[in-house]
Image 1 (cartoon, helix red, strand yellow):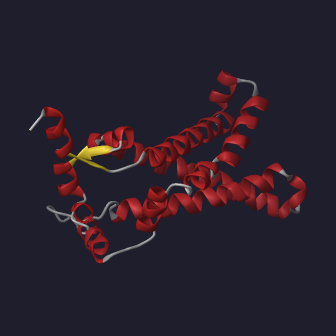
Image 2 (tube, helix red, strand yellow; image 1 turned 90 degrees about the vertical axis):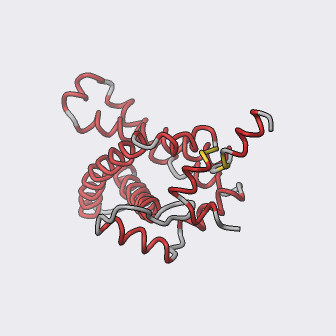
Length: 205
């Protein structure tokens, strides 16, 4: 067996190029949103960066464009299949959650995405929609009365803080899982890692 063949059999494809593009584009737009939001709300950063009008424009347009990678990604059959996986909770997901909540060591069964990743995806999708809606009300002030815009600002600001904290946790977990990062970078992961962390997916027909 050649080294190339051995390498291929030792890995398994986890993500297609389209799926990786969606993740990267979404991450880039989300990064711009978070950084510009910090520059708008933290006085020290605002003074350091300056050019508030430019920062506001970048924040508004990156937020408005945030759903675009998702919509474009729907062209990909693989991306649509992964959306179906993320939207479906199976028995092994319940077992995974019980193991995590009770801090049980050992094997935690998971499909291509574990229950934590499914909850994260659902929460992020809802948060993005709420942020987009409240942001539009703040941007186009004629769309709603003052009381509604005031409530939108409150929700937008506090949800942005929660989103920043959760994103920091997401990045921290990614830093601690190099094989998962490799899957998003190259599309392939180690077969042994997949069997250990996502055995239900690897064993699926």
